[in-house]
Amino acid sequence: MKKWIISILGSVFMGAGILTGCSLQEDETTEVELAEVTRSIFYAPLYVALENGYFEEENLNINLTTTWGGDKTMTALLSDGADVALVGAETSIYVNAQDPAEPIINFAMLTRTDGTFLMAREEPENFEWEDLKGKTFLGQRKGGMPQMTGEYVLKQNNIDPQEDLDLIQNIDFANISNAFASGTGNYVQLFEPQATQFEQEGLAHIVASFGEESGALPYTVFMAEESFFEDDKEAAERFTRAIYKAQQWVYSASPNEIAEVLAPYFDDTPEDIIADSAARYRDQQSYAETPLLPESAWDNLQNIMDEAGELPERSDYEQYVDTEIAESVIDE
Image 1 (cartoon, rainbow, N blue to C red):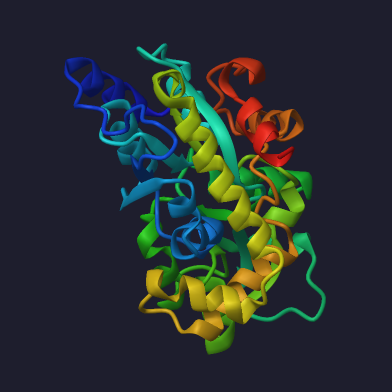
Image 2 (cartoon, one colour; image 1 turned 60 degrees about the vertical axis):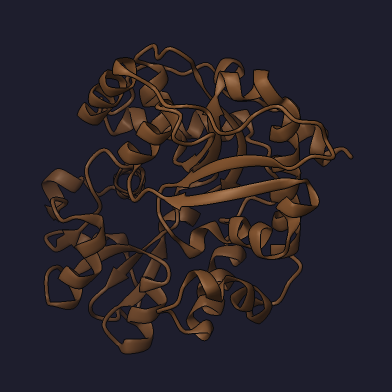
């Protein structure tokens, strides 16, 4: 169980802000405060929905804030600093296990696989998972979904992360790529666009995808407190409809078209790298094709958390996942 969950709930119970989203008629604009856990090409459909005007078509004004961390994202949601959070579904499981004042409901899935890649400093002729044994592996933060998924995949390939590797997982997320670039580790677990950038610069080589190896799971999900749906379920439906339009567009557009739309959100990343990164995620179906979060993916998530020793308790799918909204939007 994450220690930050306890501090989040404590601060929330001390006092809460004012909810910015409110129930309005369909022809009026609804303000929605949205907190994203990080800024990532992994979240391409969200930025597409914003840039292509899909939220505006649904009479929604989205105020997007990047909160830079699961703990800060959930604090914003639980203290009414945000109406909707985009964050890993595991955070809702951690919080709901602590019996918050309101349960957190997952209602629209954005990414359906892990988004990290295994990169080797030296390009192997024929990569085998056995190659990792005895090597230094620069992993992600303990208890986070990237690390849990990474360790799950390693174990599935007969690698004991604690026994077979020199495992480093005490480096801040933002500094992992820099640490590897400066010479730390034989292998590293990275998201895009760092993976593509490192390949282009000759610093490392992608040898495996943790997303392909771990299977479907609700890696990043839009979630809200239960009252958000009670106060304005119509706004939640319109929000989900905009995301679904963006998901469909991402799977029909060219990589260059996607890069052009995403470019304003990634000032420091060349468009060719954005295009290659988005294409890689799309090719392995990391972007969810619909907002529906299936029960099999929910179960897979909890199995991975359980294997990592981080699952506080089994979280009931029917209680904490709203499928009615996504199903309604898809069936229109």
